[in-house]
Amino acid sequence: DRLSGDNSFFVFSLRRLATNVGYVVSVGPDAYKDEEKFPHGAWCQKGDWVMFGRYAGSRFKITDGELRILNDDEVIAVLDDPKAISI
Image 1 (cartoon, rainbow, N blue to C red):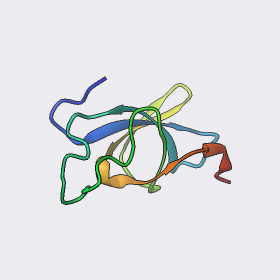
Image 2: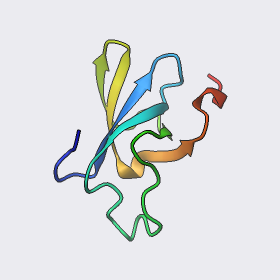
Image 3: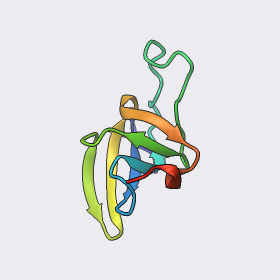
Image 4: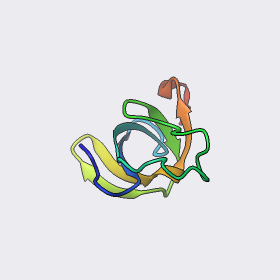
């Protein structure tokens, strides 16, 4: 569940949603630790729905979609309701 020594986290991206919306399934221990980049702390946490750039992260195909590893600075927004995003 943890990614030792890096600022990445796992995001599960569903095919039925736009490829730039995903569910955060894990956050690395060093994510959002750079106080110059993130003076107000973390933008997201495990269990959040987030928006990220179309080509962000490393992609891994899984049965029901894909898993992406993103850097902490690749998250664009946290979403309250991912269904509100139109495709």
